[in-house]
Image (tube, rainbow, N blue to C red; front, side):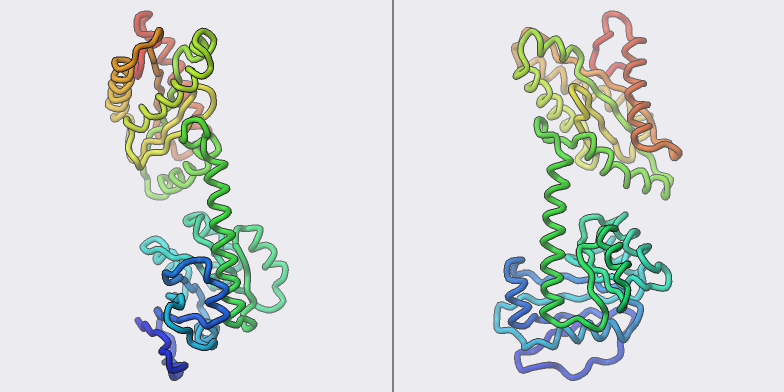
Length: 344
């Protein structure tokens, strides 16, 4: 592994031939530094996935073409790997700000490599690298989730810096917009869209690795009556309280959402059906604790239903099964417990 930084005195001598992995640092020049000035002072970590050693070397040389910057310049930390498998491994084990991705890799030609990265690392901005004349592929790469594209052999330091800044800014904006569109404004939990979107990668991972998880359906008993008798402000207070109760009852790694009205859903990661009684008891305890420390003319009650991960089921199907289990549990419960919290 080779790691090198430009010296203030000028360009270094030509580097030796690329090995399988080459890690180099480059300090941007005046134009590149101005272009990237609003991103920050930390080194920009770039992962280059390119199988052609000559093209990879040309891109590394581009980073050293501009005049070395004065003190305080923002460096690039460039890691080069020749294949998609190595690139995915690097992304899984480390943090990178930008990926420069060759779209003509032997093992993943065209958009396949981009789609595989997007499936596993949605928030990492990708700049697609393509050959001359691939205009259709350039447009398709943007539609498939790339933030920008560059034509091999026609990249200079300023253009690269601008592309990196643009990719980072677009990615940050997309992440912010996704976060806003995935969050329930009342409780701060995910909404249905967020739950389905963020839960899908868990299903794919469980299918690949034969994993397990529980989908838990929860609803607030008597919410309509609380809204009618006490008022909608009190109903909103109850919904926020249930959100906090669920946060206390589940782990940080679990996925929590308010779907609509008084309906909530939880994906309990790495849990099987044997954990359902433990989860129900924990929720019931936290509900009772909330009731004991509040003086109100109603009692908070939460109904639960559970379903296990099924490799053949989509997340919407699992959510429907959990909701059905919750309804069945309410119908089977004795009259005295018909609206009890966490009924088993």
